[in-house]
Structures are given as structure tokens and as C-alpha cells.
Image 1 (cartoon, rainbow, N blue to C red):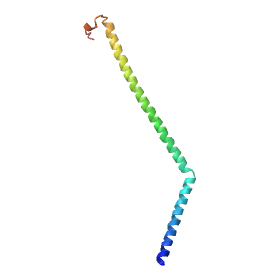
Image 2 (image 1 turned 45 degrees about the vertical axis):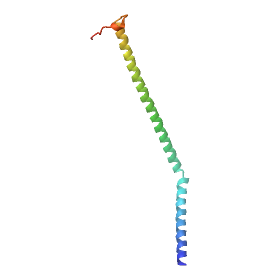
Image 3 (image 1 turned 90 degrees about the vertical axis):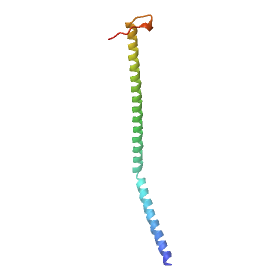
Image 4 (image 1 turned 120 degrees about the horizontal axis):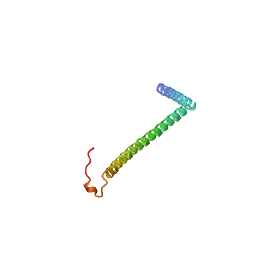
Length: 98
């Protein structure tokens, strides 16, 4: 009989403790603080991802601009060579030393 009463009292204490934990959690989540924290975390992650997207786009655009500038420089060099040696036979263009 003593074993049974000890078992029941332990069960009652555990149940009481669990109910207190549940009540504390309910009070914590009912105040709205976790929702505000979750929203602020979501907003900060979203802004980080948007900033990362813009950084990647800017780097790509810079790389494209660098390539375009190099191609324009090469084109200008070739046009200058052709204008300097205004020849019909382009195979025998002499090399001009600068």
C-alpha cells in the first residue's frame, strides 16, 4: 500500500510540475514577444538576402563592364593599326616600333 501511495504522490508531483511548465510556456508565448522576435529575425534574414543579391548583381555587372572595356581597347588598338598602315594587303603589314 505504501508503494502505491508513493507512486501516486510522485505522479501527482510530476503532473503538477508539468502543468506549471505548460503554464509558463503559455504565458511566454501569449505575450507576443516570441512573435515579434520571429518577425524581426525573418525581416533581418530577408534584408541580408536582398543585400547579398544586389552585391552579386553588382559584381557581375562590374565583370561585364571590365570585359567590355578590354574589348573596346583591343578594338581601338586594331583600328589604330589598320589606320596607321593603310594597306590593301593586310598580310604584309610592317611592324611599327614605338
